Image (cartoon, rainbow, N blue to C red; front, side, top):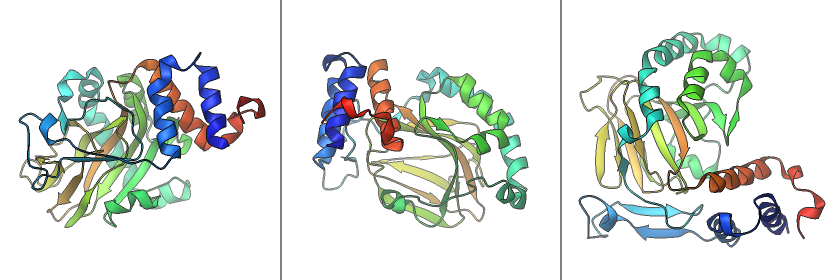
Length: 276
């Protein structure tokens, strides 16, 4: 089977099962259509104990065991987050300038403001659009060339990102309660253009905790927990969004997960000898 070939290739590439056991388990569970469901309220600070009145529930078909799960992480603990925040002015200036010429962007065949690309992402609704810079660890060459300052800042920050993209949210829109289905990446936002900045009009709720976007600030949070968002202003909200490898993963586990992403994108990477 294809799943068997991927597992055999993983074991061969990473020198046995021991260093990547959690990734192998994750891949096997995915092949069995397993979805991890767990109430995470008691693991928060302060803890939440009543699952019936809480939204702090984890829903993750793509699941690696024994990873820390918290609603919001302290962004100051990540060096890359500070570097991205320091690059805010350059990133915002470039973004506003380049996206001002929408017709020119379309002619250059970039993926300008694509909607939800999969059924899994449909919970984001019609008001949410993205412009992809990195997908599954691979740079979009057209968009990277259109935003060279942003690409440079992202690269030099060292952010361990599997995905990077600009995201827009239309005025008066909301994103319904949903999960992003994967617990081995965290999500991070660099707030770029926030209408009525600081007036609590644009908000993000992870589980039971709500925060507002503030221009130039980086937030880090776990979107395998049920979450939602709202833009109550009369203008479009823009952020630079990252899916970053969970800090509890080892370097080898990250490499193994990236290998799975690569194989799913390019199945020919697996030789006929890799498995049965």
